Length: 233
Image 1: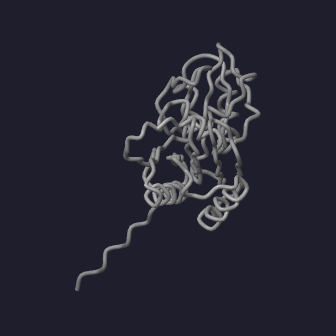
Image 2 (image 1 turned 60 degrees about the horizontal axis):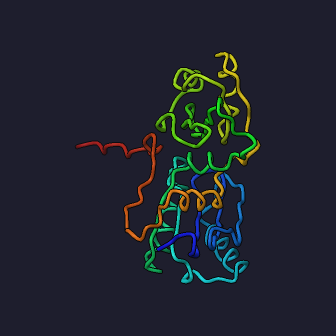
């Protein structure tokens, strides 16, 4: 299957938003992104239907589906994966996954990219630490995805100028300045956009017709309280 000649639907619920887009022959037909801290499970399917109606398409028209794999909120990541897996199974079409670091880096404008500047994607982990990955100006990874406390972040990044993107910038900014890093902040949206998700999937030729397992990217265990042991009498 040639992805750039096919109808594709992408969705993201991993972060603090809900985003859906439809692409045909490499062009976005319709897209929507709504910022929300929670409630993706209630809004996702209505947004999908709204986008299908706007594009004049049906779910069964899709040739493939793409979903963000995290990191992000545990529940949000699972909501997106479950929905996308259900769509792909029902339509008997391929499902591919792209992590949120790549999607956010893809959203940086060409004007902001410079050969001597690395793109640092910082995702709010909803705790003291941050989820981070660094890319060069051509979006090649400079680091693996990692979790770090803000005060340790500078030491874990390559040397050079930094262009920050993502929802965790405010938590990292002061510590990076104190470390003497020269930084700029991207004007791109802080949450993953399903348009950029689909562009990543097409540009990396992920839609090859081969069924692959799509797994969530977790950089730490979910916040779950285990039940206390019952007393033994």
